[in-house]
Image 1 (cartoon, one colour):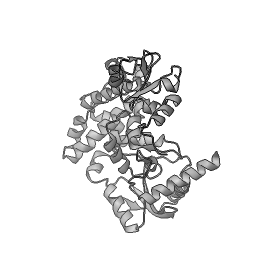
Image 2 (cartoon, helix red, strand yellow):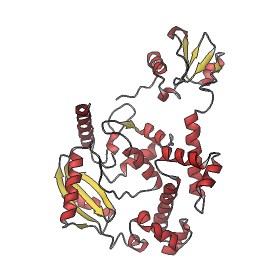
Image 3 (tube, helix red, strand yellow):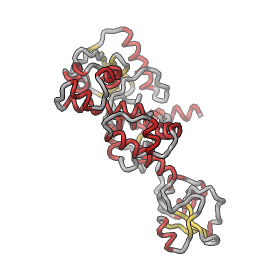
Image 4 (cartoon, one colour):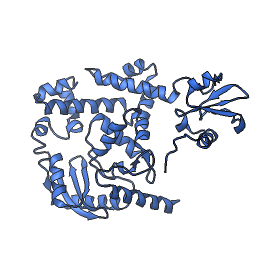
Length: 356
């Protein structure tokens, strides 16, 4: 669906009537009979259309002699944005801290109770503060190992208090031991196979932790080459149980509105995992824009980074990056081709229509 830019007076009035929160940062409306201006989402009683004037921002309404509404406070930072700013500050605090921070320390810095901070953090990022810090440490660890640090040096440089503390999280951090990671995943079993589905060919790979790659394509050679850049020592699978799981993957690819129940091995930076968690929360048959997705994770200025995280996805449909479109509703780039993206969205829309 095309996203309204709220530039016409008709679109703005419709936003006021429906209390559309998406319009809050696009304009304010003022009421000549009360001398007050509000956000479009204000819960106050709606005025008559003839008494309404629109202004691009609070400064324009103030200059015209109107007073800000005490209820929605259109001259101040929106409450939701204030909350996401606190979470963004907490993320920066964790990124710069050498040692892991406790929930109590983070909550105190955000001037919130631990319970409310934990709840808000998870609603904004999709991860708990503990999981976020674990992902940050894993990201720092991978970088340190790639930069040539010794295993011991990388463990301490990435914020682990001790070797034993790291090895308790080693599987989640790397999916293998540090020495295996340094050798390109050697001895860390990754099995794969290529099958046919409605998207064409599809390579499915699994590690000991779950499905780690779902890669549609046209050429067996190109799919195998792509996988080996991700997992250099992956081997074709002869396991009958794995092929049964692959059949489940194919069924889900052919009916993308279904529920994913297979275990996934999701590897990425803390930011990528945050984006991917938000993607998995988008209902089948629905779409969001890149800017809306950036707002969902509390980083409205990170639209390009969000697009890059979508492009880095290795699990087609399981992490539904095909549900992200441009702000005007048009289909944009997709790692596996715009035609596949259109086919997946059309299939989901058809299934959703049948269900309704």
